[in-house]
Length: 189
Image (tube, rainbow, N blue to C red; front, side, top):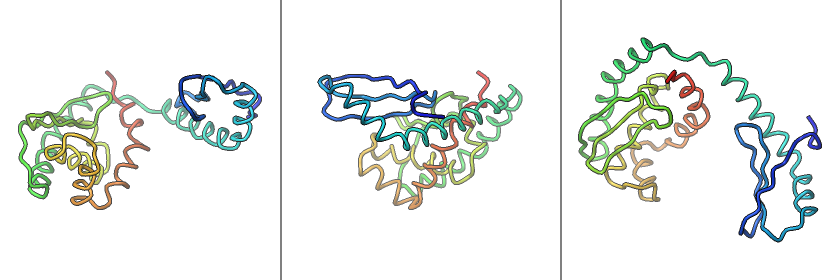
């Protein structure tokens, strides 16, 4: 693949800097200030050609992997939900004591985009597809949602609370970011 063969979308806005993006759909986007000349934008793209080609290759590989994923059957999803109903409440109970928090109802769902959530009332929702992730990743999602019982945001205090319970949370979070889309892609709904 050559940079000359790649269509680059230019999006102008009221910004001061130039930004480059390779989307999961393998599109290249440049965000640039209104007043920046097109020749300068093209020069920027040329300077970043190695980065662009590398990231396009990664995105194309991921797109190929996504096409190979077999959706789970209704029965398989029901079995995952049953398993989650047994496993997740135990993990919540264990980590709630470590976090020093209480919680309300625990609901297991088959969601398309979320791994978990915590309501203002302390009710917790978890995705049954977490049963396909390593146990450490499941624990990270549980801890993440429980820490929202102390901080209903993603402030530095929130992340410090997560780190206090799971010092290696960043590795677990990275696994979810790198592999989560493949897990979600198995959802047939």
